[in-house]
Amino acid sequence: MAVSSADVRTIVERVCARPEVLDACARRDLGAVIAALGSAGVTQGQISALTGFPQGRLSEWMRRKREPKAASTFQKFADGLGIPTAGRRALGLAADDSASTGPTDPHMSAMYAYPQDVTQATDNLSALWQADLADASALQRGQFDPGLWTDASLRWLVDPGRPPADESASGVRIGAGDVIRFRATVDMFAELDNRFGGGHARESLVQYLNVDTGRLLRGRYTEPVGRELFSAVAEATLLAAWMTYDSAPTSALAQGYFAQALSLAQSGNDRLLGASILDAMSHQATFAGRYTDAANLARAALAGTRSLSPPTLTAHFHAMEARALARLGDATACSRALSASVTEFERGNPDDAPAWIRYFDESELSAEFGHCMRDLGRASDAVQYADSSAKASEIAFGRSDFFVSLVLADAHLAGGDAEQACNVALEAIASGDQLRSARCVSYLREFAQRLPAGASGAVGEFHEQANSSRLWRIASRTDQIQAGSRA
Image (cartoon, rainbow, N blue to C red; front, side):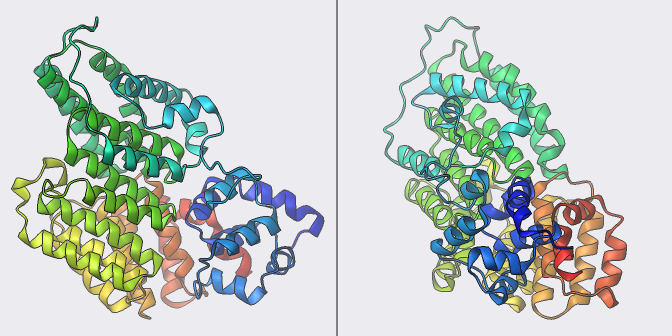
């Protein structure tokens, strides 16, 4: 039942404060925002009257027949509906005539910022760990700042390096054994993340890092041990960033952890790890709908490691650039980046690459192709690559397998085979129901939004079986899958 026009603004403010709607804004998915408002009783006619967009255009956005791209479109949509500050920031717009899109609290901004040295990075991390444990939900509600990506990548590219470790520190003596023990502990958390998603053990990792990183970084150590220590803590902070990103994809907290990790990698003189962190930032930027920023971050990783990066790692940088370009709809540039990725991958030897990138095998490369082909609207190619990736995977079903399975389901839908799409999605849901991952929920939500209307046949059977899944219930509850507009 539609609400009165007088109540629309109040509903917009309430709906656009929900995390899943903020995520949709960050992806610049106006169709999902319209669907969420529809489920709350705001009609397309009311949205049309407020924004000036024809109802037919609003329907096209919801059905994925057309995607808005012009900045003026998002500005007009937000201004017309009176979308509140958090939603405007997520859309990449100035909030209340302010150019800032990052945290409004100056203390929080300082914690997120790219640090000048190890001391500042240590202080930032200590503050972030403690604030995270005190109120993780508040930090995760903060929205990312695109300017931080630009600042961090530029600083990393031009930074001449950091001074050697200072043995005059008054902390406890840190040796190579301490670093080995620290790495082994973090590796266990990484295994849990891969198997069960970032939401499973994120808080436990943060608790461990809150206790150990300050003690280690403020200790006394030789320069060689210091370099190893900085790299180890950078990898651990990168894992915390990934797990936070997986739990709250557009959060400022994840972005802040990425920035601190990048600085520590620089302090450890670990250029390849630093480039990989930029690569991870590119991943978050693509998910958040900041596709040009994402492409530039991947290019910065490439530019900063020329002649240094092993082919396997370089191939991944090109793949991340291709992901962003596919979302931009630039088929020519995307194909060029994918071709470069294949060239590097084929000449690489995984054993010559750092341990943390050796997972990038043929299955992973095919998955990247699948994502790109789906986003470019090439359904048959997407089916080929996503299916190849799923069959080539040599590990137990985990988060990456879930992602590529949903890409395969999307591709089958786009190719007109709803029955096969539903079968693939059901298999993924059954195998991945143990995952605690907001990104997995987001993939499911996108698939659900692409499903044709109707409660009979393959789609009806899919809904009946999927309703027993925790993941599907979360995805259905958070977005109502356009039910309001179909009722």
